[in-house]
Length: 58
Image (cartoon, rainbow, N blue to C red; front, top):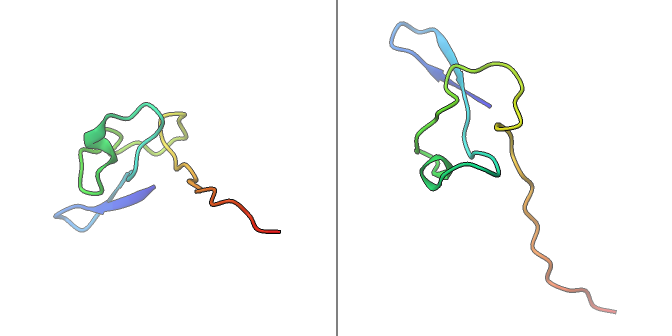
């Protein structure tokens, strides 16, 4: 969750990143934010941890 600053100085909640069902444009850092203004939890908003398995040595 982030906040956008409006021209009048007030703040509006928004998101960056997207969810499992976001379209490509919504995953861009400066992409479309279809959840701008939403301030309640949703399964469509959140972040996903990404981990790359590189193996392990013994």
